[in-house]
Length: 599
Image (tube, rainbow, N blue to C red; front, side):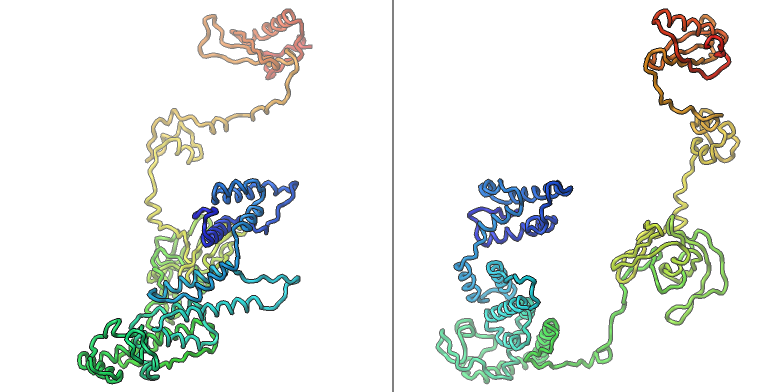
């Protein structure tokens, strides 16, 4: 936060820090924690942890924006509300001396050499500083009263600001000040400031126009510089210089003005009078705009509004001269949602998925004319939206989507908002969106042309892709397909094809487990091998203990040797471990048929 708050900071900078900090907290949606609008929940409340985290975050921001010495004095405070109240009691001084100083500066402020904008900015700064030092009272009635006393106080303070602003303007704006002060009610200060922001030549023309009507307004005034009567020091020619065309020796202002006006006429003909009239018309238009921006009441200014007519523009005067009502650029890729259209209209055949030729079909336009329909077909906007029986009219420069026909042909709903239109299906899923631009709802994602879509087609010779596209066509038959070249199709291994050829489903996973060794023995035979061992063995018998996962392998030449090895294994277990095998689990093959032995 800049500037940093410390003890040496001026009152104005402290107030700026307070405003800046409040804006920053409101932007982060955290001001409700500081002004105690969001009450701290109980510790047992489920939202207490989230509130606690936001509270500490605000405290850390405040500690970062103040001086380290001030931060040390408030770091022990646990809640952001207590931190803010402590800083407010410490640095928020509303003493009478400061109020007296501000009032003196406000009442003594003059425009002087400043421009009107700079003068208004300075006045506005002092007014806001006074409002923060002496804020508006707050109604403490319980229940709150319905009177408008606070609004009346605020209105009177605004009126005082307008009067002080006009009082500080230079004497060049004396006539304009008198015109504003007769308005009832008075306009706001910023409106008065805009009315003062006019060219100097317009002000001079207004003064000369009023001078012809009311005579010399400075009659009786005495200049403190030259000692002559009839003007003040602000308009003393001996101090500020004589105007162009001044002839010395004439003491009468009327004669001097007549000679100057005659010289102006001789030099430029009637251009001076026309310039004065133009300047006066500019001033009148500014005052008319000011009267229209004020309060909308029957306020009248002390200025006579003189209309002007130009014979050259008499034929077009008072007529609307705009050439285009809608400035939106419309082209073939523009799709407009229209609630007044009865059918969809497409300007190009490239958007159609399919179409047919029609004869004698016409569409009536609002102008009374009619256009011929050449084709009728379907257009896909996207995967979810399809325009049925759309009309093809080549003379149109853009495309129209009929709202009524779209709702009739599809199970969609349209939600019109101020800046967009949402197209949703019956489940609420968004299928399209249109943005409002210059009064038209334009589809954001228009369909692409069919020829553009065809350009994205890619030739593929991958045997695996075509095997899957054709529904897992037999791999050994794929070479019979014409116009498709394959590479290494014979070596393709498809897991889906292997699983689809299984005669039975896989066994479910077993959830049982034995507690001791040799409670359960799994037995299975694998073979025959294509290549036999050195001893001529082509099979092997695997015996797996379910508890320890210990495995025994026995090589065999034939499956008939299985019974012999099982009996030897049973005797070995009894001899070596002193226990008996409780359960043998096999796949019920005939080689394991040993009913007498197992019983």
